[in-house]
Image (tube, rainbow over all chains, first blue to last red):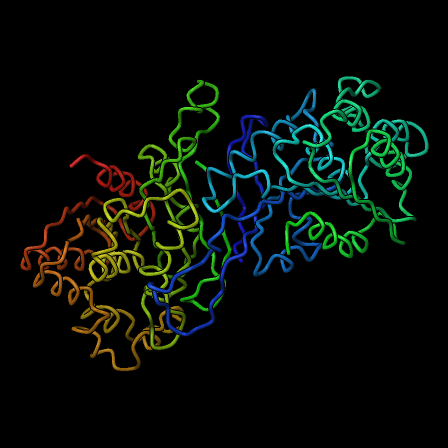
Length: 266
Length: 270
């Protein structure tokens, strides 16, 4: 396994940024190194998964809290984990342009730096938890030409409702959204439900969508709203729900389902 | 410059090891000036690469912290790899992890395979400080087919002096485990595979390709005599080199400016 902290200047963010990358590599245990037998990477280009963290989180979360690194051992999948503060993967009005970074700049920085990373749509995936689940779906809806499949685990799929809640029942805890939008009451294309309407006529060009949520999770309702909207728009998806809440126990149980369903891993 | 800090499995070392890698990429200034999109990184260029080896007691991060290597590499537009070498003298020791196989055989293959780095001998260089200087000279001479240029700073190249005499009577120097390298008989080291001059000799009496060599040492450095002796040995063998010296000791106050001039030498049009 190759663990990389990839530090590079990002023009979208206007500063140096660290992205975590993990790449499965061969690990021969024989006693003498033979240059003629050197082979570190699979022969095929590697599939790339952009794996997004949640609110209050960082790019190391999936590494430290989940089994994804051990899941990709021996596979043909590399994982890229950017850091996006609490931005909700938006271009923040008075802050960093995380949407531009994740959706446009980072894939270029990954492809130029890692020669084994596939450049094909069919080999490119996005997934995330909570705020990251929202981010993955936004990538799938806004950049369908770049992704074969996207997955949301406990995603905040109804962002308008979440923003409203931040002024209501979630006022005293959780994220505020005033940093992320010029006007948090008018979020335009950041609203996934609006995007679904916009792209429904191109539904054959969309990636495959996977989402899962715990029945005790406070974002359960947002997922039902999204499900209904996708059904109404005729957008194909796979949905599964399980007992569980908004926590790593849930994400760690079901991330494998997401990766297998997307065909990111076999 | 992009900085990639990597922890990964090495077949030679039979375990995980760490490297810091610099790859030339545009920074804030280039983006502000509008030249970033034309940077060779975006055109898929594979960059020349310098393997820089740390000294005894140090680690893969030391050179990064104690020199301005990033700045020098950026001006020269070369990639730099700073591996971990523990206190191995970059050998395949009698006892310990196989750092010679790692640095000279495996690492260049791994780097070329993993990053936008050239696989051409003419664009592959090795350098180091103190124990790393010893490593760079010895490995650069022994593996002349891999490395086109050597930058050796203040290394203990003369194995008739070091370790036989230098640490006699010194207590508490746990770092010095020359016995680990080749067993207890230090007198067997000169003239053996551990002796850089053996590899200089082998190269001189062959038709093999030769590396270009840059030697640097401070005149107040206790290892200055080895710097002088190495020049005598190379001259007597007809192996060309460039030597640099200035007032200074066995420390990064000397090595940092010396590194700047060495990197310039590295990329001079010949």
